[in-house]
Image 1: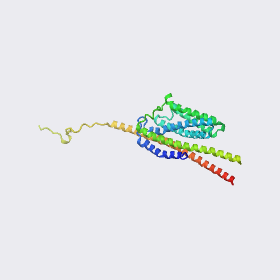
Image 2 (image 1 turned 30 degrees about the vertical axis):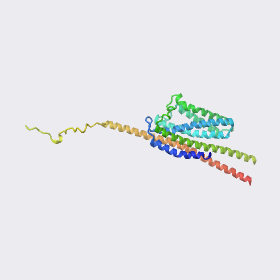
Image 3 (image 1 turned 135 degrees about the horizontal axis):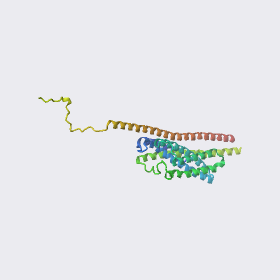
Image 4 (image 1 turned 135 degrees about the vertical axis):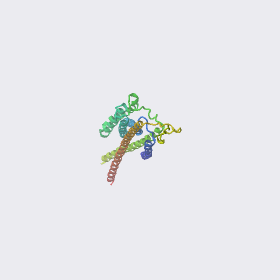
Length: 222
Length: 92
């Protein structure tokens, strides 16, 4: 069951994605203040949430890896970091596109933008260390991942702590019902896609570790 | 002296009580409205370009990562086949 779970997630995501795009373009009313560009919200916000979720998973798994020297935790942390990198890049690219349509400028340098960019840079540094650093850099990499996870609540509360142009934290809860009905299918579809890719990548990394170990054993026995 | 009656065509017909005076937007208002509608249509078209660009970026990222996973899978499979071949050679 665990083996086919990612495939099932991808299968379930496909019709939801189609339904969500249909709702976004044809069923959702145009927002009064921001106009048509508001439709970017329905994919930008889920990507932001998924990026934060992946950063938290990466931080927790890196902590476990640091404490128990678990290879599986290391694989989970690396897979989560890669998906955090992808979703973070998605947020950092779609945000300025939306900003340039509604604010007239792609980057205002407000707290949420800066903290999100910081998280993405931390994830990028973690990935560079894990892929190209020596074995001894695992501890430093794990510390970076934990720092990234600590950054997540700062991103979430940035709109309350500092003056920003981003809407407040309760914006999703205050959506009218027809927008609410568009937001959730998009979020669930993207979450299923991300989790499926996360599962596949984790399995790949575990398998790669096992293969490396098998090669070493074979060479030792020769 | 006989009274001169005006020709029938120039005579003002009596107002029909069924119809009121014509009221509505002036030509200037209509032109202004058309101009504003044009601005709104341009904004909507520009917004749609932004939306398509944003969605394109998102799906390109996911597709890119999917291709990366697929290539890694192919490399792992080749590595596994190599290992299997080496084990078979040793067993012989």
